[in-house]
Image (cartoon, rainbow, N blue to C red; front, side, top):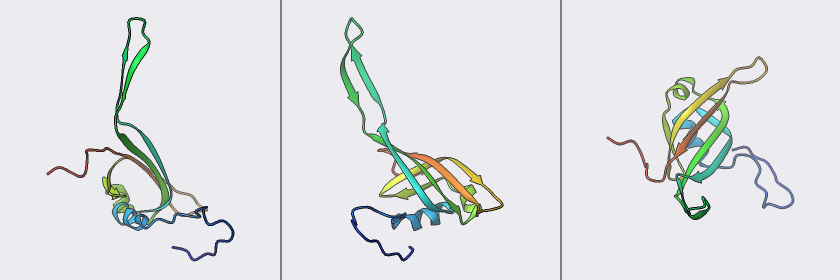
Amino acid sequence: MSNFTQHGNKDYKFGFQDEGAAAIAAACGLKPQTLSITRDPEFQATAANTDGMTESVVVGPDKIAFTMNGYIVDQELFDAATNFTYDNKYFILTGRKADTSNTDFTKGEMSGTSYPLITGEET
């Protein structure tokens, strides 16, 4: 983690200050710069009356989708990674892309999902 001095209100968080970032890099070959988390219900169901108006709604537990961007630090691992654990949740990688440039280091993006009942690979 970089050494910096923050002045003023310390309620604001600067940078990617997450100990789990090192674990993600070790599992996926990507040094995270940004991590976006989206929580949506794994399922929803509605019941409608005879007029088609919703009278009841059931909302399931959240699944967690993520998009992570950063620098590729291990191309072979980046290409082969299928999952990682973060914040005690098992994430399944479902997409990845690499961006190369003549003015920057190679960047990567990964996306995937964590489901409430999926806690790891079944054997």
